[in-house]
Image 1 (cartoon, rainbow, N blue to C red):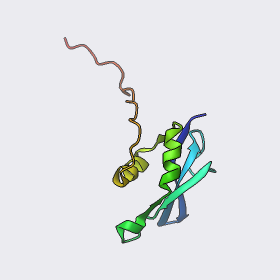
Image 2: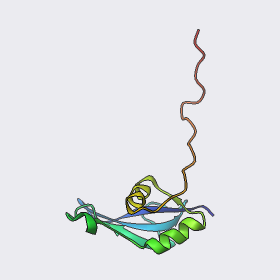
Image 3: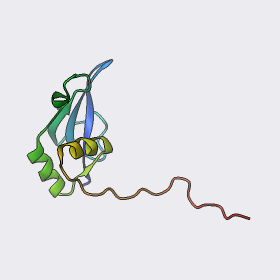
Image 4: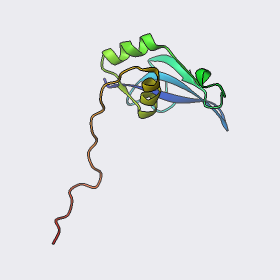
Length: 100
């Protein structure tokens, strides 16, 4: 089972609020998480109150091999939490054409 730490959208129209959680990779965006790890409110003015994280549980999930979405990776980097390097993705265009 592939596990990923990512965000799910909450709130109402034009007033988003996001929860950070541990999800099975196949779960839909707003589906049920395995565990909630914090929240992010982009409309809060104080930078310290925008993101709340349970760092101990995040470190646990990273230690058992959970992947991290790019947005959550940036939050963790700001907090000083190291994440495993993401594997490079394959090129969508495929092979390059040979020059004549």
